[in-house]
Length: 619
Image 1 (spheres, helix red, strand yellow):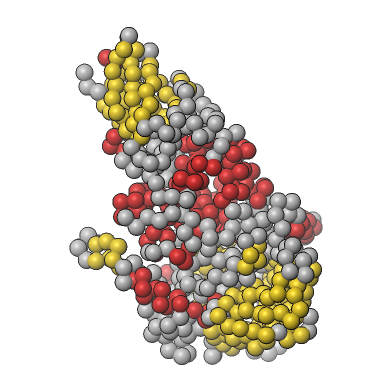
Image 2 (cartoon, rainbow, N blue to C red; image 1 turned 180 degrees about the vertical axis):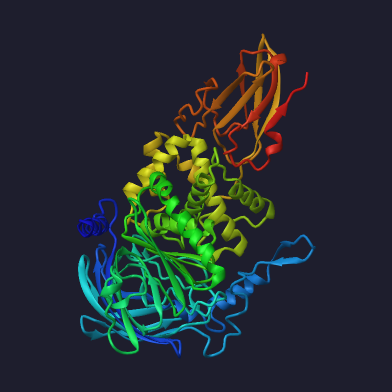
């Protein structure tokens, strides 16, 4: 019965990938066969690919990512890292200049020796058996086709390649600081995504990824002492052992010095693996959820932290599934390796057993793994939404009564004050500083979602999250796709929110301007100081302890949020026209009864100057 359920689930995943009423997209199936030489840190392989052109366009060429060519002296990644490292972004508490390094890269690529660099060399690409003309562009391989791929047709490709695993610098590599031998991310020539905007042939400079949905059948031949953890599900566990087997008594390993591991992953856009001869593994079957593999270096100092990680992520899953939708794959792997935390479909590489990092990386399965937005163009749709989800899940695990996103808000405020802010529409690799990229993609992106709850109401925002999950899984949504989901769920117009928050660096600042009594009623004037208009909640507190909430919708919304707290009477006022810098409303209570006026008592509004948001009155 369990196998039947799994089969149905996987078929369902594949069907979702092919059913695209909203937008066409390409489809790919990889069969990859590689042989790893653990002594030389080199491997060779062959990819047999089935590629379906579902677009209305005729393709005269295709492109592949060859990511590891970035790990060579004077590469674009090397030059860019050193250039950004020369930028001074502040001073530390000791008065020392802080440079804008990516601390993992710095000038390490420049200093790599010949046996430490990375490379991916493609020997040939054949299409339907015919060898094609190739042109290398550092980390992009151009394949000039002798016969164009017609719309809605399918071709077969064969790619022969060899590679050298670089020393651990960024995400992938060998011999990281924790002693993991191989972290195999971006390890194979990967087809570039062609979508409604054309080819996304981005050089590998530092940032994010974008890929074609498809099925992977990967065979890895390696020294038999190595345990492999990977995307996908192992197909030959009883030939492998290492804890993957169903019954230890049934493990029958082939003769010889190597083992061939066979993993299959369906409806994913990438594949990662890691290998080490001293890995240990914890297995956890989550109730109504996936089988978890927690794989780590079998060192005493790591055992207790990774055991705690296993316990915690098992508890986290019900919160994640309820709030953001269920995880659809059979298994997920937390793998010690890499340079910190990096997400891939069905797996993550994490350097240490940090619980927050683990939850963050698993939540990427939703916004990078299932949604698959173009992270290069819209990194905040993945990193920001994932950061929001991580902080929300962690708050519930820590049994906080209220969900607070202070860390993301504070980071955003620091970005505003720094002078380095750039629009969130900036391409991931084109930010002028690493700092601005990080604060925008993670913090400002997270605030986008938290603040959406202020605009629509938290319950409606949660409905938006669920609708987004149902409607856009496996479809590469863009920012407008998300906003349209939000508009339909809320009944509001929300394009203005995207235009201000995402497309500009304009900020929010509302202030209590003045108050006076007129005819026994109290008048309160609010001033918009910042350039970004928003709806405004103002809470009044009186001498007798009673409170009133005065809500002023923004005219751009053409709607209003529902009541969120029935315990406090709410008055909805006329719309505030965004062209007008001030707004006056009134209460029937006398001025002498009033003790406090507060803008945004929920503190979800990303107001950059909180000092002018509250007025305490001492009579």
